[in-house]
Image (cartoon, rainbow, N blue to C red):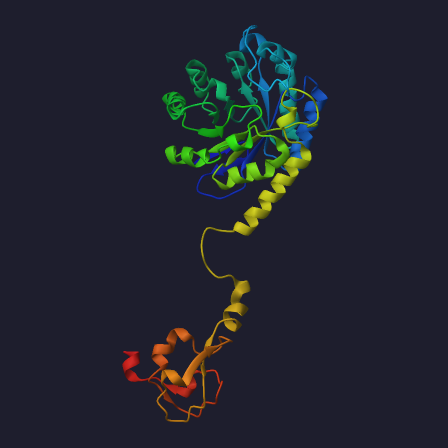
Length: 360
C-alpha cells in the first residue's frame, strides 16, 4: 500500500516528509521498568514517533544450545538462550504499563513479538506489528500475525529477494496488504561498508506499491550520515536501537543511539527537508527583485537617431531587466526608432515601432 497509518501518523509514499522514526529500545532497559520509562520520555522529547520493545520468553525463542551470532567482544554471552534469559523480565503487566506511559507522551508503542502468545497479548497494545528479520521465513508465525489486519513492518536482514517475496505473499494471502519492508543487515554491529543502503532503492524498485524503510545496526559514530542517507534514498520508516547510555557493556548498547543522537538526527532532517522544499520548479516571490534587476534588457550600444532602422550593431544587453528583454531581440531588430535613443539607454516599446513582418 502506498499510504499507511500508524498511530496518528499517515505515511504517504507520494509525499516527501520526515520519516517515521522508531527508537528500538528492545531490551536495553535490562529489566528496569523505570529505565524503560525514562527512555520513552527521552524519545518523545527528542521528537521520535515510536518506541519499540521486544516481547518474548527465552524458553520459546531459543534452544539452550543455540550459539551466539553477534560480536562476542562487545557482548560476551556465548549462548542465545543465556542472553535472552537475562532480559526477558517484562511481560503483560509491564508492557501494558509501558503502553500507557507512551500514550501519555503522545508517541506510539510498538513491539516485536517472538511467539504466538506474545503476538496475541500485544494485539490491543500496538498500532502495528514488527516482524524481525530472523522470522522472515517463519510462515506460520507471519500468517498468524497477518490475520490480525494491522500494518506489518517487515525486516529483511540476511534474506534473499525470493524470501522477501514469500513473506509478503503469505501476508497478502491473509487479506493484509499493509506491509512496510525494511532493508536491514543482520550483523551486530554492521560495518559501515556493509550497510549497503543502495538496497533501499532496489527494494523500492521491486516493490513499488509499498512504503520502504530501513533498520540500522551500524555503530553510532556516523549515525547521522547513515540514517539521513537512508531517508534520502527513500526510507520512509527508520528504526534504530536506542539506549540511555551508549557506554554500557554488552547487548545492544554499543550500536545504539541516545537522546542527543536522536535529537540531532531529527533536527538535521528537518533542516534538510526545509532546504529541499518541493519537487517542482517555479520562481519564488522573494526572487521578484532579482528577476527585475539582475536580468538583462536590450540597451543602445550607441546613439540611435529618430527614424533609424535598428540593426544588431545598434544594441547590446545589460542589467537591469526593466526594459525590453533580450528574448525579444528578433522583434526589435528591423524596428524603427520613434525618438532619439541615447547611448546606454534601456530600450522600451514606447520608443520603437516594430516592423510589421516581425509581428505576423
